[in-house]
Length: 268
Image (cartoon, rainbow, N blue to C red; front, side, top):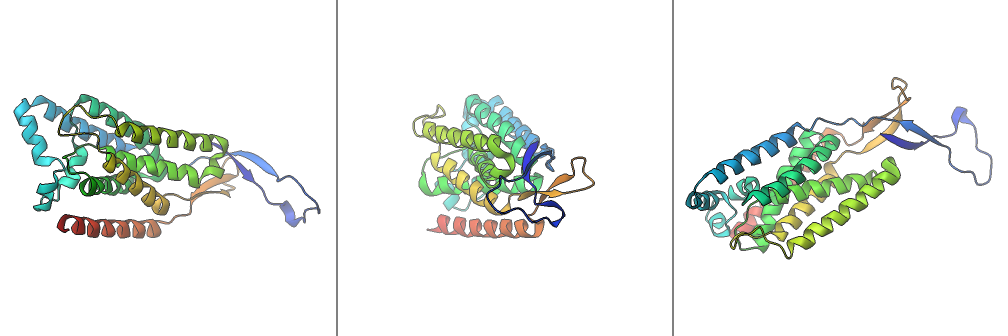
């Protein structure tokens, strides 16, 4: 990737008085991106679960969903695991294709930019945030990975906002496209359904996941900066100035807060 990097005056020279355009140099730098292995693993997992579900007779499909879906009364009765397991279920082929494609596209980008560990944290905790929002604001049963997908959607938007100077015009254009796509998806959620009477598109879960992803990415996301590096071919490299100790602490704090909110919500 190519970025603009503003160079300071060299050799301690004092710039002449008066307005001067900033000295800019186009340099080629490489981001320390990760291989999106977890994205492919998650995609494979939800596809395998869906294939098992689709292979069962209709009556067994209903029982399978009833055992693992987000069902508010059963969660209040102590089956808290449903907030997690519902993130890996899909109601029909259309539901699976839409979520699978979104995970394939967004997941690869976010895992590459954030690293596998931070991507996993955002996907799981953001997905649980979506399940919690669905539990609080929607009585209907629900399933789907879309809460977690909206979390990584929000994370990518935060990344390109925080790094808008690093990526320049192309990055700002990509951020605009992400925002428009997000608004379209939320708008569709107000009117469309997945095709069943008891399981409908859960906009509360989408918004909860989006908010969770935005908050998490803001505090645990990478803080890439360009620095001089004589060992690099271009003389510059990119470093992450958000150390693991800091983002791990923020992750633990978010997880603890989420546990407290879930405990309060299910007993209220």
